Image (cartoon, rainbow, N blue to C red):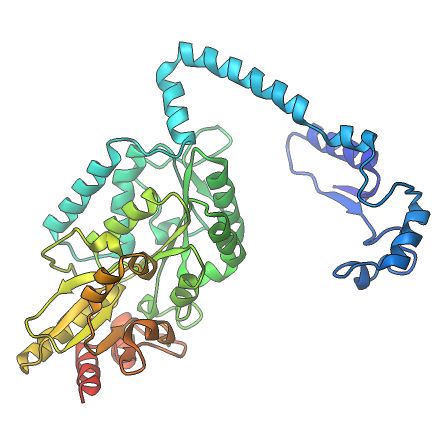
Length: 448
C-alpha cells in the first residue's frame, strides 16, 4: 500500500504509479487523498461541488484562488501540447503496422487468424457446424437439464472458436461452463477459462472489457438469482453493445431446496427489460443449442442464457428453422381456439395441457418463445401468424406482468408473483400451479 498520496499533485501520483510498477509479487493499493471542488472558497469539500454548477461568483473566486487567469474555455498551448497525442499516436501506429506486416510475411496463417478475430468474423465453418450439432440434438431427443445441454454445446463450440473465453463466479461445477477442452488461465500463461471467484460484478466487467477490446467472445456463468450482483455491468454491456454471453443457471423455483433466497422470480423479466439484451430461456437441448448459436453470431449486443438445474423433456417439433426467430409454433392444432405461450421448463407443461384439452375436444396451439426480444424484431406478419388473434395464456415460472404485452388484458398468465419455498422442484411446481391441469383450467377460463 502507498498511503496519503496527494491526488492533486500530478508528480506525486506519477511517482506512486512508478513505485507500484516495481512491485512484481503482489498488487499495490495507492491511496490518493483529494478534496472535491478544491479551490472553491465556499463549496470545496461539500456536496454542493458535486452535482450542480458552482455559480458565477464562486467560479470567479476559484479562478483567483488557483491562479487561473485564462479566459473561459481557453486551453493554453502548454496544456494542449501536454494532452495532444496525435503525433505520438501516429508514430506508434506506423511502427505497429511495420511490425505486423513483417509478422504477416513470416506467419501468414497466424496473422490471418488475428485479423479474423479482431474483425469479429466467425470461422467460415461455424454456421454449418452449429447446425449439425442442432440436428444431432434433435435426432437424440434427450431429456437433460438445459445447463447440461449448454455444456455439451460448449464441448463442440470451444474447440471450434478459439476466441471463446469462458469462466464462472466460483460455480463452474454448477453452471457447467467448463468444456472438455477448457484450460484455466493461470500464472503459467495461456488458457481460455477464468476462475473469477465469488465476483459476479467483477466477472461481468472483465467480460465487457474483453468484448470491447475485440478478438474475444467472453462468456461467464453464475446462478440467475446472482445476476443482481452483476447488474451494473450487464446494463453497461447492453449500452455499449458488447458481444458478451452471460450463462445464468438455476433459472427458477425449479432450483428446489435452496429456497426463495436462491430461486429467481423477477430476474428473467428484469433482464428482458434491459434495452439491447437478448434473453434466451430454452425449453430443451435443441433450443439450448440454437440459443448458443444465436448468442455467438450476434455482433451488436450481449445475450443472457437462462438454464435449468432440473432435467426437462425433449420437445418434438416438425421444423427447426424458426427457433432462432425467438418464438414459433411448436405444436399446432386444427381449428385451435386458444394459444398457450410458454418458455423454458414450462414448455413441456404447456404441451401436456394441450393433450388434456384435446381429450376434451378443445384444440389449442402451443407457442414456444425462448427469446422475446428476438421475436419482437420479427416482421409484424410473422408475429401475428404465430400468436394469432385467439385468446392467449402465457406460462412461465416467474413474475407474470411482463407477459401482458402478448396475452393482453383478456388473456391470462400462469406465473409466480411471490417468492418461492424450499422443497423439491416437482413439489414446488405443483404447489405454485405449474401443472398441466392448472394450465388447462386457465385456458378454459379465458374462453368463457
